Amino acid sequence: MSAVDIAGGNVDTLTESNNVIENCFIQRTSQKSFWESLSIRGCGVTVRNNNISVSPQQAIRPWGSLHMIEYNELYDVLRENDDCGFIYWGGNSLLRGTMVQYNYFHDASSIEPMVYNAKAAIYWDDGQSGMSAQYNIIANIAGRGLFSNGAGATLHRYNTSVNLDREWHFADHPKRDTEIVTDDVFATIADTMKD
Image (cartoon, rainbow, N blue to C red; front, side, top):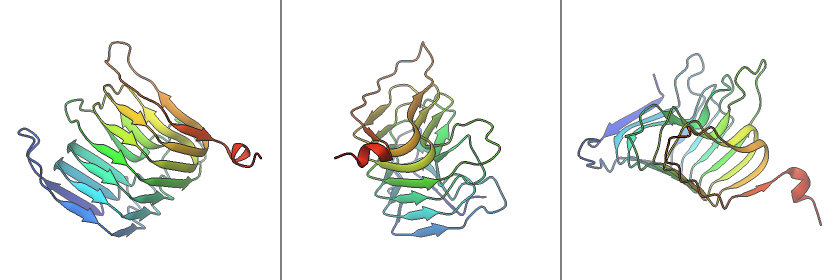
């Protein structure tokens, strides 16, 4: 089970819960399991200004609609998983409207043996659609900044990525309506050291 599991609101009527998880240190969770550090479910949960770190699995798993994930620092997670994200969700394209903004994702090393090579800061999987990721800083990850597997109607803009294996990967299905706007800044360590 997740270290922190919060639910509220009503997804069917889009009634927001106004639940807030703020100014928390969530560390060293899920040491012997597959569970995320923080699970948010329902509608309208805000996760703000938290430090989530040191976990073998994902930091946050949103499920529902209209969540806000902002101003968090997430690092040293995904120690035992290479097909997952610091923030990971998927499987229901009807759950929309989650915003991921102004977060700092950093420092996740690779695992051996690497099976899937799909580690990412933000991972939209299995057709999950209607989310946005903007104004995030993503650095020093043995993986991608954003991994989108079949997502549609998503917004990805103004994110800054430094020293990643790959900045982003979109494996979108050809029949899915996808609106990806990328005005992101990508750099490697070599780029940042140029005169």
